[in-house]
Length: 85
Image 1 (cartoon, rainbow, N blue to C red):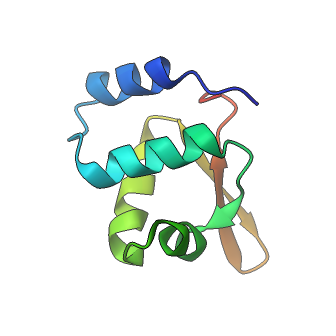
Image 2: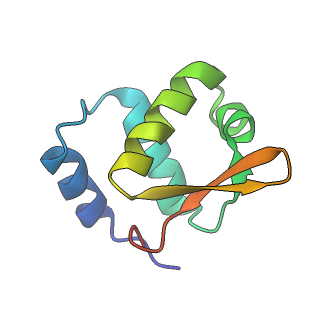
Image 3: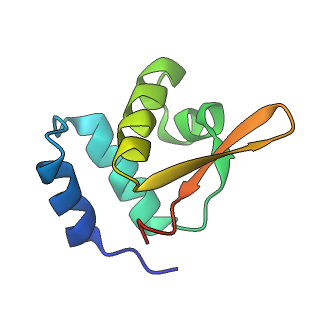
């Protein structure tokens, strides 16, 4: 799955999301790891960040359809959305 990084940046700009460091870190992570499917805790652990901040940023990306959440059992998994790819 190829991610068009410029499209993601354009969507971020259009959606008025504050382009802070954590949003950019998550963007960078998924650009280099587009096949990653993990929960918020796993993404936070991979980035060395706190879960609450990562969760908020992921919610921002879900709102603009760059990432999607899928419920699997008791876990909510995060992945690149079909629209975001």
